Structures are given as C-alpha cells and as structure tokens.
Image (cartoon, rainbow, N blue to C red; front, side, top):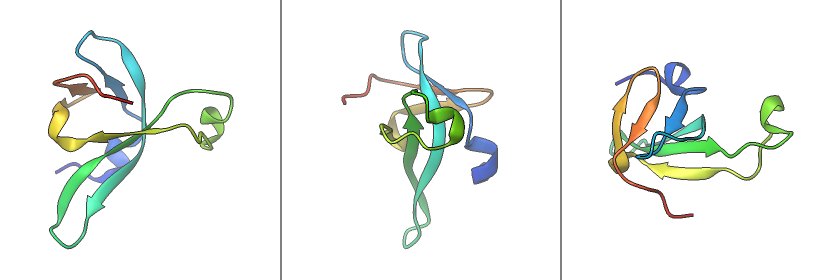
Length: 78
C-alpha cells in the first residue's frame, strides 16, 4: 500500500475523465488496518492554503487504481 505522503495531493478523476479534486487526507481504520477512503478538496480560495472546508469523502471501494492520479470506478454522490 502506498504511504500517506505519496497519496496526498494526487488528483482524483471520475469516470468521465474530469478532475473532481485533490486528495487532502487518507481515512484509515486502525483496528482492521484497512484503508477506508480519501478526503478530497473541492476548490475554493482556501484549498491552496490547505484549509478547504468543503471536502468530500471518497470511499476506497470505488477507487479503480492509484497512479499519477486516483481513478474512480463509479460516480460519487454528494
């Protein structure tokens, strides 16, 4: 599994090929030692400062692949 610092900052791309945000944080269940999902920023003036408050949690089960970008297998519902 990639470490947290390698994932944060990657762009998240939906099934249409549109960038929907960047990974701001990683959600991990320490009891089961599993990756739960990614918190992505949705833009705004504070995102550049690392203070975006309008993020979305992307469940790990809709992630297709993590490479240069994070590609999703389905749309997210906000």
